[in-house]
Length: 478
Ligand code: C2O
Ligand code: CU
Image 1 (cartoon, rainbow, N blue to C red):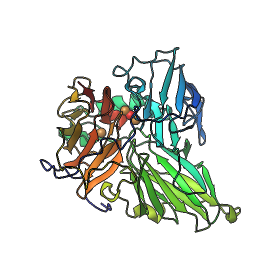
Image 2: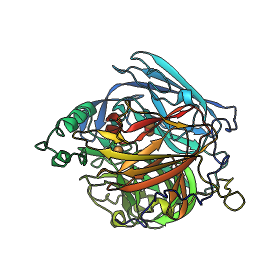
Image 3: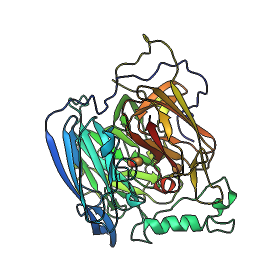
Image 4: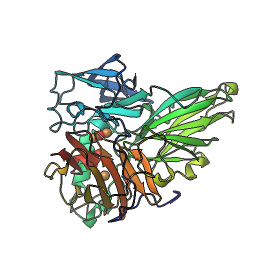
């Protein structure tokens, strides 16, 4: 473990912490409209995807992988027309944005799925700036090419930088060895008994199966054919690093450079200098890099506990025709330290009652055990498998605390729709996020949020295979 601290801590009955802000974060009701309408068409359809030297059949948006970048401003109205030309149902979820419930894109929870051949228009006021993403929320469609970056510029940018690059990570198997549905069948089949192919699965409580992917991509390109990020000496570069991978956590680093983390899941943090990042499925980080070390450098995302590498090339204009680093070069920064949630302090969000408000406790606490195995590839929250699972109740206006303990052997990036939450760490209040890793082997994670966006909201593991295998609940306002 190279992390700077043990990360988040379950605080049990301790409530001597200032509460979360009641009005500090944007919610659909508070977004100030710009009056501008931004229209996009997202045609979801089968396509041929050239990935390095291969051509595979997959599903994507607008003919490419990832889908087109959506870039809007906070307060704009986003009108996205989805044309479903897939052979099955689909939806789109706006991952990271606390939108109004009816456009949140969860089939059977916030809308009926969009049938094959039909169109559907999502329209909402964009409530919050930040580096977010959009993706299908049906089955394992996320593990095809049905995802893309969703960048929301703030009304006033307070970071100063000279250029930016969006870095979208992905683990790729579709069309190479089979489909994501084949992969899930294999995970399920191999877990049936102690004699299965994946030895780790035989142990009952210990779900140990992971998918080793044939390819890891940055912006749709494999290590053999990396994208190039250009830079000039002296510039400050912003990287928006997004992880819509279905099943892979990464360490991320820029060879020859340090990074300054400025945002976690789109929300600002006090800048933290670091060599590496650890980024779970569904998480996003923004970093600034000072381009003060001319050359041609490896930008690397190394899957955690899996062989392989995703990479891009950072090329200084001054470096002429210098060749890129070898395909499998692992910059030493990858082994460096990465910030834990406890190292990330929220920045610029108002309404903390920390010095003035009364010290009180949450109005409601949900204590949840995450587990896996149970004699098969099944992933449970408190022993229940979605959709056969009770909703978690909240009431409007409550300060809600969720305490999780992970009794399985895999990390779970837990994602909450419709709200940002604040991670509670051993040092007190950590960053605002919408997706946070609960570490394996009895790892704990606690977060708080304000129930200020009524509706039925999905809360689930962002490992797509875990979500498909039960690890989800609905948080329900009653
Ligand atoms: Cu990005 Cu419910 O997911
Ligand atoms: Cu999980």
